Image 1 (cartoon, rainbow, N blue to C red):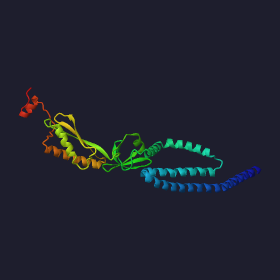
Image 2: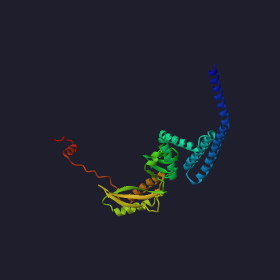
Image 3: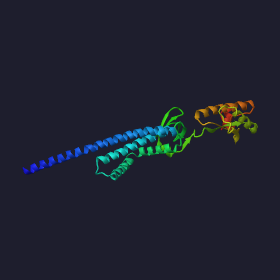
Image 4: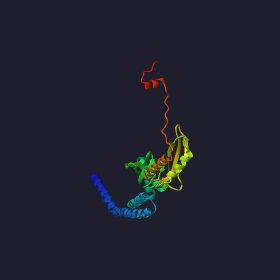
Length: 293
């Protein structure tokens, strides 16, 4: 009987001790909640302020991602402070050590996500291209719509949306068409062997100089490129706007202008010559007779 009473007394003492500990911890929990809330408010304010300032000096994608990171950093710091207040026996060093082990575990579990996030941050800081640039990467070409923390978004020249993971963009060769305001384009023209190549190159250059959209500095040029089977091939080169739509339009106008000028000057642009071997079967086919063996 006495043992049962002692057991009940121990349970009662434990319950009272737990209740007293809970009551004593309530103020600390309230303070911890207030710290997290204030940290979140400061994070929101810092995010808004940083985004507004960065947008005036950097790209919108850079401002969006960096301001969001500042919010999460302040929230994480406020949570660590709240834990330190709630559990006074836990030292800040222990919290940082636990956070380190937790980060390693998360890194293994979400390796692809973290790799894409790190690649996105590096792309935003290095800025090999910006939103609005026209690029080619991993077999895709188009206009950059957005660079966020996980992927790069393109709109192809056919109007389709392409989402490429940032790690693939960072690890591969990137061709930025619009890195400079102008770029050089070219096309080949084949003239007959009996025509004068010097006359033809001069005519091609003069024709290119009449086309709107072709730069005058540097001037367009035309050079003999190779001696083909049936033609002397001349390469016409000129500089124009680097954006795809403008370059296509100018190239179309340039080819039309060159053809019209060569036609006007009487410079022949023959088709490729194909030599046919007069074998017995070929002669028999022409004569409408069977080949004799």
